[in-house]
Amino acid sequence: MAKIFEVNNLSFRYPKGREDVIKSISFAVEEGTIFGLLGPSGAGKSTTQKILTKLLTGYQGTITYKGKDLSSYDKSFYENIGVGFEMPIHFGKLTALENLDYFAHLYKNTGDYIELLRKVGLYEARNQSVGEFSKGMKIRLNFVRALLNNPDVIFLDEPTNGLDPKNAKVIKDIILDLKKQGKTIFISTHLMGDVEQLCDQVVFITKGKISDIATPRDLKLKYGKKEVYVEYLNNHERKRQTFSLSNIGTDEEFLSLLKTYDIETIHSGETSMEDIFIRVTGEDKYE
Image (cartoon, rainbow, N blue to C red; front, side, top):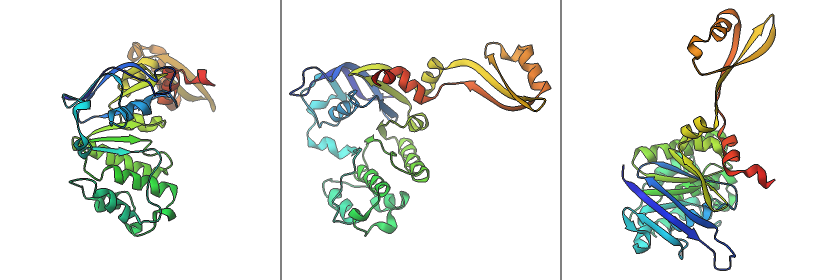
């Protein structure tokens, strides 16, 4: 699979900064995948995203986009890039449709944003002033705006944060559908459930450096315990026993327990993405 972005030894310092906020990081992103940029607040992930979207320049290192140096692209770069900022930015006195019509005129080509309004449940509110929208409605409108130009590459910052489970699922389903269409999607979020459900690969950035990069599955295998625990009833008393996954199919004690008792639950020692986040980033040390 072709690499759409390749980042090598990227470093960046803000003009008045005393030290680099990005410290020689390198990674590659395959076309048509969902890539997670993760880390604690202030770790450097938002700065990295701003560099990749050409909102920040003056960095050290090299970045290629579709095989060409990122700095060589002019404003036409944005015709194929969509960005959904964490804080929704709209004209509050305009309606949802008026907002989208205005921003659509900034691009040469646009997608079917009326259909997108339907998908995110905002079609009936299309002629309502955005200033009257709830937080969740503004977030969904922000998501639609990021897709206005039918971009090949989409950057989403906390795309489901603040949404109820039903609307969050709608957004995640659309994101997965965009991946099926061959789009490349960057997601920055603190919601580890979204990461596990959506991302093909994630990079953890801690204090400006990459602390780990892998698939969610590989991270769970790396940081989880290779064991299962069984909860069962013995004379109406709930009990729990843990077994190693090594040769569990021939573990006589485990097999006997399954045959003998009323089993309530069986769980693997797989760790949660939240626990992985804390371990990889050392976020507990910030407390």
